[in-house]
Length: 573
Image 1 (cartoon, rainbow, N blue to C red):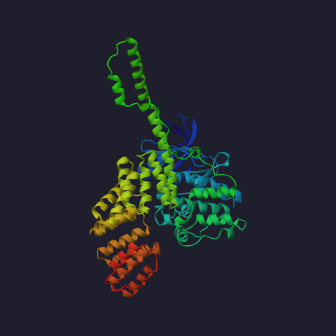
Image 2 (cartoon, rainbow, N blue to C red):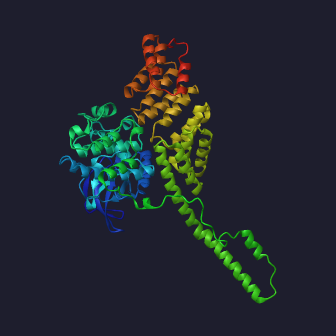
């Protein structure tokens, strides 16, 4: 394509191929600047649903403005071809640097610090990278590390995972929960831990000679101690790296906490985006508005209705007052008010991001307080409503949470991310309360809007349908979920529940066995398998599974429901 022109770009040499498609150096002819063009592979572009999601995530990622994030400029189209225009980063990748051997400890910590700071900003904006690895970290101007492909990794990862034998480059950086089919901000933190370990040790923390073995090791085995591979690493550094590699995502530090700890270890503050330096303290009293700006229409009309004065100079004075009042009112309404509202929304966005951070730390009360302040600044901010509903749900205030979710749907009925999340949470609430028809309706809407982001709506809808006496429909729904999240143990367990409720315990055993193979510490799968075995008359095996269930932690509500299910099977101990 060297020398070819597409839209307003002059395309140069090919820079490489990735999971998404071909990458070319180019020049933006309108703005006269160098760019990189990433062309979307035909198989990705042919999937309309995936392409729509891909474009939406790319546009969200384009709003990220950080010195360590490669900037996405635009999502372009020429005929049937789709491509991304983004910042051209011409240095080596971190992979090329690691190939030369373990890095000096200060250099590795500095790279980790800057990547963590970039991830922290993205996570505050609700964006997860999902494919952090040395190939996606490149050195740009002044040897500054840049995180590449924010907003693009989901499509590229999906493409790679469908091709046999091509996952090894990514498998070593996959978190245990990503291997099981779910992801979130902690997934990026785990991958950062792998990268930091590899920079220091020159090797990965987990062993495996093929993708499946490697993923099994990540999900089930501890990492090799860092100081065995690099004895001169300080204990504090080793402790941080191993906390980043925790199996349980809730035990990992957030990206923001990791950036702060790495900054302390390097003695240099983590880089921040310009808008992050703004003051985040919220003023409790708004600035007083001028009397002229708050002049009401009624008062203006009252002035207009005054009797005509007798003297000419008084008429001129009254006309001047009216003109000035009208000018001030219009200037406020059409010039000052929109600007003031925009400023208040900016404050609300920053407060929402702080509230989201508190949710990630399980600080429900702090999150509720901060998100409440966000809504006081912008009462129509739907994302803050959804986040606040999450906090209230965790505080067992389902009534308040449901009201917030319905309000978010009113204000953002055109935003698929908010609609899907709100509808799912409303469906979950109805499912817990036993309102099955309403739960099914909400969950079907959630999946109609977004069917590929996470498996929970499939699990909840399958459960609701089977409880409603519709196991055949439930089976179809759960199978659709497994098509997207094939290794998710909770989906496998739900299919076992469907088969049990459809009086097919032999089939249930197959699905529940697969669930426990994927995630052995899944208490309810043991309980359901105990029921299936009991229905088949295999009582000794059933009692063994029931003992395993009783020995594992389970929610009191769940345990009481399972006791009710197995009553009469002779499993009580």
